Each structure stands twice: as C-alpha cells, then as structure tokens.
Amino acid sequence: MSPIPPSSDSQRVFGPHAPKLAQLTDDVLFGDVWQRPDLNPRERSLATVSALVALYRLEQLPFHLQRALDNGITHAELAELITHLAFYAGWPCAASAITLLNAIPAAASSNTTEETRHAL
Image (cartoon, rainbow, N blue to C red):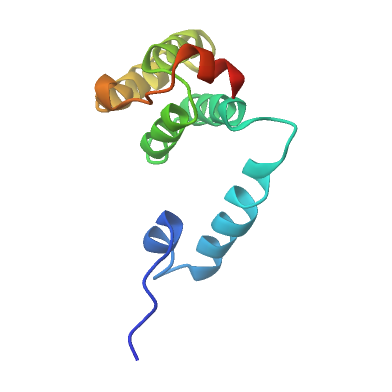
C-alpha cells in the first residue's frame, strides 16, 4: 500500500517526521485560529509577519510574507511594516526581513486592488 500523498504544506514539511505537528498546524492553527472572526486574514498576516520579524524567525518568514501578499497586503506595505519594525525589533531583524521580501518579485504580489484590499 502506498502512502497517502500530503494534502497541505504542513503535511509535506512536518508530516514525515512529526505527523501530529502537521495535524495541529492544519487543524488548530490554520483551521481554527486563522479562521476566527475577530481579525480578518489581512490583520492576522500583519500580526504574524510582525511577530516573525521581531523574533527573527527567518525560516517561517517567506511563507508568511507570501501569505500576507495573498491576503491583500501589498509589497510596499510589507516594506513599510518592516521599516517600522526596525526601530522596535532591531536593524538586523529588519534588514534580514527586507532581503527575504525582496526575494519575492513585486509582480508576483497579490493582484488585489486598493478597493478590494480595504474590504478584506
């Protein structure tokens, strides 16, 4: 019998070695916490990117930078957020985060219009 193919990023990344972590990531983090109504996905992305930059969690940052773009935050807004964080989280944190943001082409950023973005 062949194994069931992974159905999510967390299953592909964590599943082979930590299946419970993959399940919790899918079910609790993204299936519950990210779906709660008091913050929309755009606001959650701002909070998440801010925390990852401030805590210098560079390994998770590219995924969440792209998720932020997908959630309607523009490349320019992320650059401004990271610039703002430089004064609170430290210059090295911001410099590293900008390097990772710049690795995501601005053209590949969300196609969300200004009007749609503010409705999110």
